[in-house]
Picture 1 (spheres, rainbow, N blue to C red):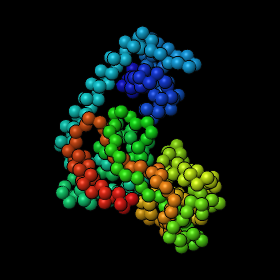
Picture 2: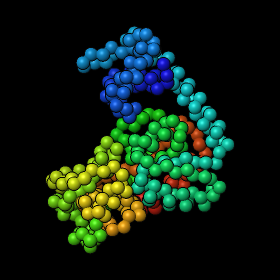
Picture 3: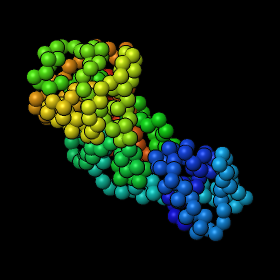
Picture 4: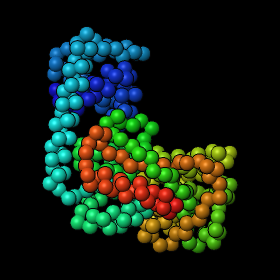
Length: 302
């Protein structure tokens, strides 16, 4: 029996549904079920009564649930206490960010933050949301700028910041490259490069929903995972791509970025700050205060 197995059991016991519990923990249902079975085997009892349609707590499962909640709460509090003690001795802030936030928001924010706290060391990790959130939960990051997921772990606090603007990445010599604006209808027959939805759902849905709203179906020429790869493929004339405006700060030659004339208020690229709920961190709070004070200016750049 370990803490992760107990967290899996608690999620299923509270949701009474393996799919919802898996989404809550950002796991595959098969992996979640395996951890619950291992817990049952280690305890020598059945904790959940499963049918094809329902999941219920057994008598032993109901008895374990409250004990497990207390144990996890104690473990989380112990971890928080030691992390906070370490943070008091440290002048290092561990910051994570999705790629466009790392290129656009973070440089402006750190410039302003260091005017008041020049001696603080900021360690920056650029990653996808699905990899940043587990690092927040484990205490390896203090703060992250992420795309807020549909299913939000209750152990994390999310603060919505703003929505990034979408532009079209076009090869420099393309017939559309000289335009100042492009309507989505202009891209009806154009081959497109889109992100993989499993790792970048917001960026993937940006293209799909803009086309759907216009009554069109996109012509997908290539799926890629990283923004830098997508923009490099545009430079190689594989296709065009709808990307956040801050992607234009990626240092890749041979690409122009043209404003989309039709987004019709569709806010598909939300950016949020996330941190561990209930944790205390003076450096993180100072950075968030700087962010809040200048948020309208940063949003105007997005």
